[in-house]
Image (cartoon, rainbow, N blue to C red):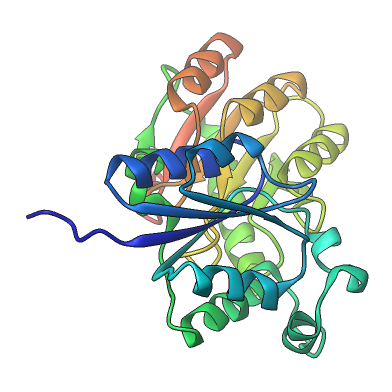
Length: 279
């Protein structure tokens, strides 16, 4: 059955994700309208768009009016945006200020959820970016040649539980541990800085776990990792990475796993049932 042609509005951030999504959308024959942000968007996405407009960050009303004017019926959010800059009141229009600054809960999931609801109110359905790039989802099981050892399995279980509890509070997605001790948890700074801090405190042989937060908006915000994550782990002499299977995006997976094998890092796609009884 042929998929009906839609007009897809892509809100594009940084790194490679918006480009991959744009290619996926165009490969399926849809019209693509892209909104980019000065200093944040990977501009390689612009030539892939049927319509591209560069906007200033935080101008929510302008963004919505642009997408509505192009008769967008589905909206995708893809790519990184620096949250501290998003929260700078100098960047926000009145619509964004009313939505965001009046809330007590300003965690990532909460903020993305209320922004998504604004698009829904205007008749635009927010859809998951990975719908157009399903191969990016992390598979379940050990992806590398080496499996976790007993100590690493124990740290994976410990970090999984910690990350899920923090996720319930909408704090972060990533935890760095070593031998049952938490070295770092992700907050406003993002995953890369969390890893650097965790390795500086935890030392060699740390374990990293990244999960999908309970209540997180799968349409707008899945955990992500890739080759750069593995390279950071190698620099910090970390030995084990666990990522939630089916609910995390794994970029450049083949190259990342190959690098992990050379560096002696084990990579596992986790579910609640992944852990051995002895871990």
